[in-house]
Image 1 (cartoon, rainbow, N blue to C red):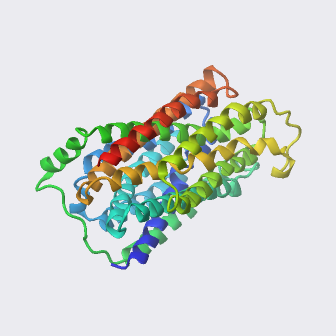
Image 2: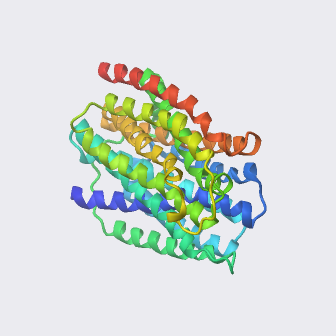
Image 3: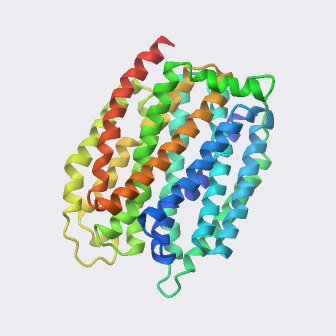
Length: 404
């Protein structure tokens, strides 16, 4: 098994699912305009995406080494190819729910496989931190691309023209399937149990560790913040900044690009600087942006906007919060996985994905509720609460991993 080829396969799979998963914010906006649903109804798409991730990850995480990581990823790619084509022909809010449910199931297979494989092709915590940050950085590049792909297919003359993007997404998924199919894997992972019951016991035993409890709470809080902002930023741009639909979507790409840059840079910095100081600086900087930059964005007097160049510079500032929240998730994952034996990585990854999915669902629902009841101009201020809790959790995790 050539490590470089396996890395390319992991990058490519993550890139495909980045576009699909994080188009949910775009489809939330389209659902309000095309399918006649309100903000709270539209926010259920996040649940259709995240809950299948949580359920499937819990059920198959510790069993996945038996299935084979390659086979699991191939199944995921095949499923989303069919789902994309179904979305084109279905063209309804119900079909959108089905699409994201399928994407959620498939991503559970992909993410558990990728995270488990990282432990088999890295030698120490520094390598693990770097590869994890790089893979998550590529994920963010895929997200950024989504914000340009969908507007490229939009048409004022034809409200259904945007659905053509799903033919392209199906094609990209099949290309990734083909590359993965011809990539040779060797099973280097120790199978954790002797049967399914024992596999589940391994996962539940992890909950006996205080390290696991603090970590899953941290992962939950982070994804609550990230998905809450990412899923609702296109709607924020449309309803608060009063930008045209295409520009609202493209503006949201700034957040994704910031997340990509932040994670790629973190992959380099953490080779030289201890993770605790990197994450502490990042979360404090993110809080300062919410406190000082967001109010100026909300109070922005936007005149006629025809292109990105017409938007005042301060309008681009809030999405830069992505630079600072970016390193948090991959570094937290890497720190905890590095502290555990490799035979437990699949089980721990299952817990990571479960609580990340639950955090994403709750984050989107809470922000959707706040958009509807507190006003879109006030919703993002509530992210300060989980940010504060995260800062505390970093130092607890530092102490616990030092004991490990």
